[in-house]
Length: 206
Image (cartoon, rainbow, N blue to C red; front, side, top):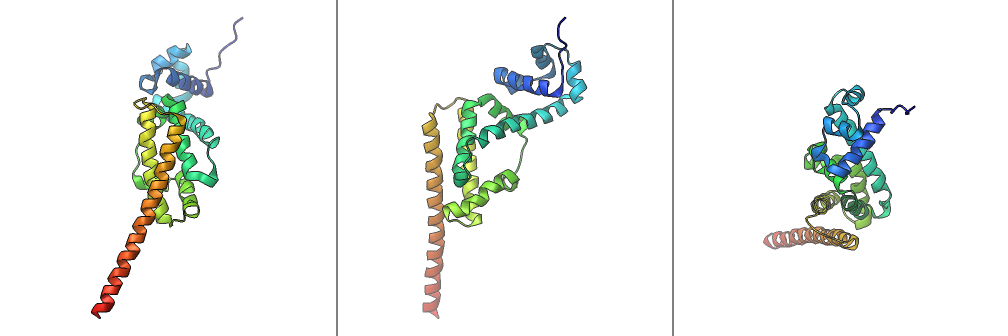
């Protein structure tokens, strides 16, 4: 006698991840997913009520998978670099899951301020001042620019519009951070110099 298949939430989420890896998030719908699994749509909707609820739970499931991947790479002693590299590495090794999470309707939309104030990003930002000898405001600017550069790089990697090696990814991100750090510090030095010059001029006029 054949064993009865348990069509529970976890099974649908696992199979949805497999489906995305095989066909991409663009082709995910209730009918094709259930056909892929080998069941009717009834068990899917019994567990999730509708596709909107299913996608909410699928996003969380995929994010948990992403978090586990990132945690294996991140070194909090070099937080900005390692979390940026981990993001690009995920795009390289898990391109279809990356696109589902960060390049589809699952990603949603946020303002830049909302991105910077997210709890998981604040932790990275607050680690920057000590490592790079920057103020918190400078750290936010550095994180912002590195974040969006890395996202652009990762999207191209996930779409396979550029071909890079692991070492090239590391070099691109490390060089960007070093260059942006230098620009931020140089701009601050110019501000101080301008203030000093203006002060000298005011003293002479007086």
